[in-house]
Length: 67
Image 1 (tube, rainbow, N blue to C red):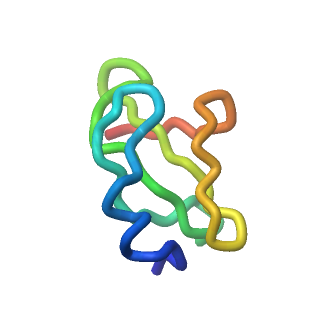
Image 2: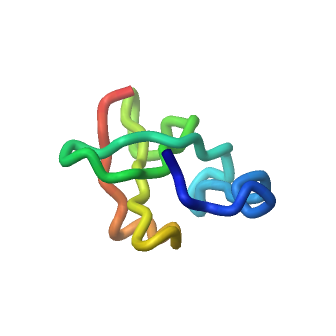
Image 3: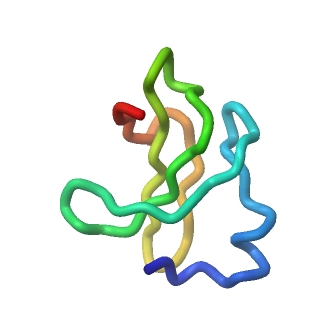
């Protein structure tokens, strides 16, 4: 699903809580990286979009979703 290089995938972490990021899909079907921690509030997680294979790990641009 993700076009991120495997070696880079291994070291990426959520910039807010430093938990692991896993591959996911956004509401429109685009690839995202989903935080495995609840760093966006109780029961909420952050999703980071991937633009042309480059993860956008900016907390202010992350989408939140229910865990």
